[in-house]
Image (cartoon, rainbow, N blue to C red):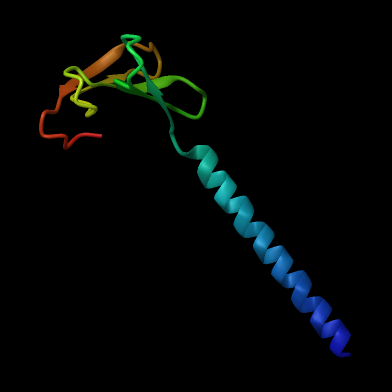
Length: 95
């Protein structure tokens, strides 16, 4: 009888752990992907591209003065791929 109870507990723990891992995997797959980029090919990161789940660029950030902080952001229309909002942020409040 003890073996059956221990086996049942192990099965329940494995099922719970599997469902937790599946939920975490789903959460990771729906989060935006980011790619750090060197836009001027000087060997230093000076921007970030943010992609949606389908791989389209939805936002781009630019470091315009070389201080390793993104000052300008462009948000792209999901249908046309054209920039719809351009923001400048010298206080670094936007992300």
